[in-house]
Structure formats: structure tokens, C-alpha cells
Length: 77
Image (tube, rainbow, N blue to C red):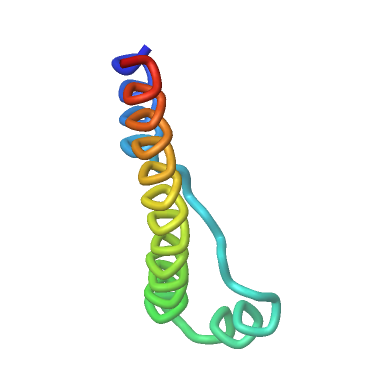
């Protein structure tokens, strides 16, 4: 079970899908520039900043899972 969960999480982490995270106003302003490098950089920055809330939720979820597993182990002993 543990290896299956690890495998699923690993596959989700290595699978990168292109994401367009800009709001409509930012996109309209940035698309008017030539080259699109600024728009690409802003979009990558937004996606990068979106990672941290997910990591925090995953960390809290893991801590809860670990504490419940430890409590269950102590209860059976």
C-alpha cells in the first residue's frame, strides 16, 4: 500500500502539464509585448508560487497521518 501511494505521488510530481495561470488582465497587457518572454516569466512565477500551498497542505496531511498511525500502533499494543 505504501509503495503504491509513493508511486502515485512520484508520477504526479514528474508529470508536468503546461498551465496558464495568468489572470485575464495580466494576460492582455503582457500579450501586447513583442517576444512574449515577460509573459512566460510571469506565468512561470505564478505557477511556482502556487506550489507552496500544496506542499504545506501535503505536509500537514502527512503529519496527521503519521500521528494517527502512531496512535493506532500504541492502541493495539
